[in-house]
Length: 260
Length: 260
DNA sequence: GAGTGGTCTAGACCACCAC
DNA sequence: TGGTGGTCTAGACCACTCA
Image 1 (tube, chains in turn orange, red, brown, blue):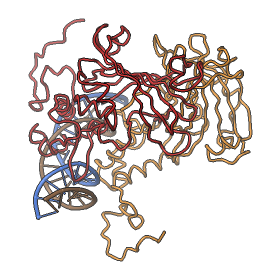
Image 2 (cartoon, protein in one colour):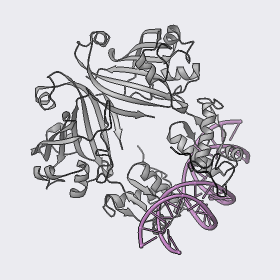
Image 3 (tube, chains in turn brown, blue, green, orange):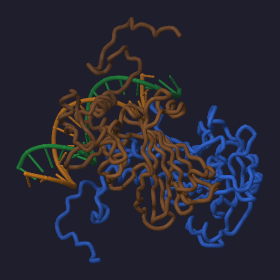
Image 4 (spheres, protein in one colour):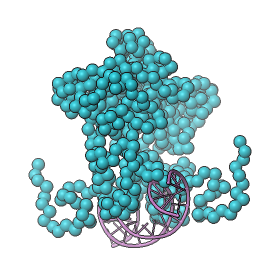
């Protein structure tokens, strides 16, 4: 509980960036560069899908060698925040131009190809945040929210029932019509229309029994086992911006996961 | 369908290692070094938990610079095959000296600390491989197998019912007694006693209804929703060596997953 | 051919650990 | 104090893309 000891000995700074404060925790140069690039992403200096300056340019801007910038970009690419394309440049990762429809969806059919899923919007409402949702999303209970319910179909059969909650403050222009007419990934829409890029997500997975309300749209009998997937998604700066609860019918599909 | 064109032009090899064949697919030097180190792991030249030679030593042995060896080791460390310890050396990853009991288990309690799980062995039998298991594990139907059934408890309550199948040929000395007396991670036992190290695993997750046979040990009513986690584990060289089917009671626990 | 990222090298120095 | 991995630099060359 006592304050950190004052630096009463001479400090030899490695360089200007090295120690902004009294060296509370040593961080190598390339991590500081990583932080600066992250800042550019967060402030929107470089938008999703756009290219960032070349390594030499960034090295000149930050006053370090190309190798140091390279290592910073390596980490950001490993985090899926940047995408390197040899001969072309380095680009901000985006959900809008994905090969696969849903980057975060781990659902796989038992047989056959990864099967593109059809989408059916059930509703899109303005709501007030219930306490439990507000808590998870760092909001106050009663704050305005958008609630979306949709179905995903595979081969004509409903497979996923999604309930999605978004903070109303960030997505003011999001309407049923806008959702209806939109093609492509949902996260791509949030990105291009509202400038909110999903960076990572946490999922909590359970087995639950289908309730009346969810059994009907999924065309299963109440009490059937369903996979409950609760996803909290974050944008830059670990800010939670989406809560989602999916109910998966895993009769002919499974949730795939790779462990290392 | 035509054979690849013969190399009728002079080839200037980068170095001895660079092109063992007629350069069928270009692979950078550090990946070839990675392959050589992997070979050392696979053949048991360096065993789990042991240290591998220093970067300078390896660089000398392979006739490349330290930086190239470093990049190879970087990738192997990212794959969780090696562990770097500054000032000490680089070590072969092991399941035997894990902080956490189960490295691959993603089960988390709703409240409280990650809770160490108690283990209860139900049985351990010699079996003949059923066709579906044989296929997944690249064996022939009828090949000898070991079948283990166990329960994991949290706070006195049964939470996980595991059925584990292992190829009999690899684990000849594995007996009920050996399992009973063993402390520490199961994969640690396979590693120290049988020299088989699990490198990665694939899981297929579903929601299922509890059957009579599984409801009893888990102390739930038949028909209750359970999480079914089918895991196929691989050792070096992507060789499947374990099939496991866990049934999780997710009333007070969940399966956690992080998406990037 | 110019510009981008990708590889490889060599050397200097730092941080950590064990003796 | 010596050995290990970790960082940073500078420069050469390779592979890919596009005008």
